[in-house]
Image (tube, rainbow, N blue to C red; front, side, top):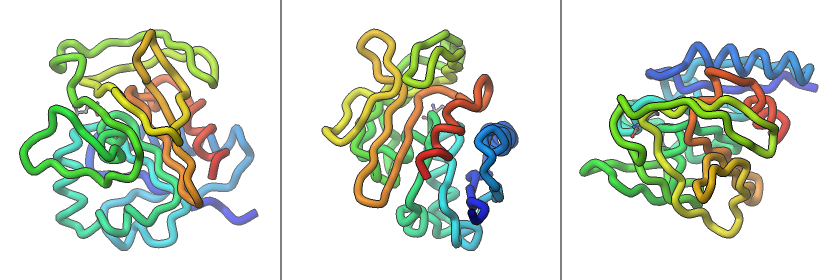
Length: 194
Ligand code: GLN
């Protein structure tokens, strides 16, 4: 089998942690991988998948647009967005900044900064379809609505914390928390879906 080409958007956020989690996930699955740091349109060429780390969705948007990456990103078949990355995937965003735009690929509605300010960040043990994990929420969004093709992978009470959408040859995975800090389970799951 050919090595998978997995990009990690590398402007800011937990880039190194996502690279490490992806490489470890590849080892657990015995899948050959090339992990590519993505900062330009050219870096997106030939990728099988892209991971968009958390950070600040408006900053990520501006840098991606400045580099002319929005169009090519929309054509990537498999995208895993965590936190700000999930916001970038969403079709609809509540509490957005003026001029905030997203890739609008996934049929979810997210509310930015839904738990309050940075100081209201927290960790919580949560149940997911991949088992129990410790989840870190950093000025996290909430997924407040999902379309009919979206499957939920983790909930806390009524809140959706992780979900996926497979449509045609496209696959999207969105998480409100930061898996790269505590587990490789979601990276393994993402790689297994490619
Ligand atoms: N609050 C950030 C935003 O709106 C997301 C925070 C995060 O990615 N940890 O983009």
